[in-house]
Image (cartoon, rainbow, N blue to C red):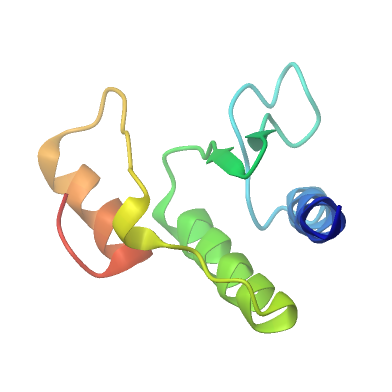
Length: 102
């Protein structure tokens, strides 16, 4: 139950960041702010547009969440999937999240 309460706070943080234009998910023309995430149990899928600046904002949001909640993102168990991006762009996104190439 405690995890669900904390995960709900993270959801609200993402929604506020999307409302302020700091991040943008997929299909913003369908859903205001776009589809930013899907959650199932303790797994979270994050969706972002192809914009390195907004990706940096998402990383900052994750760091803020970690500091506030005491929970940690395990980047070793995380995957970054890019669709329709060249390798250099994919590597830039990977570096912004975990400091290493994909």
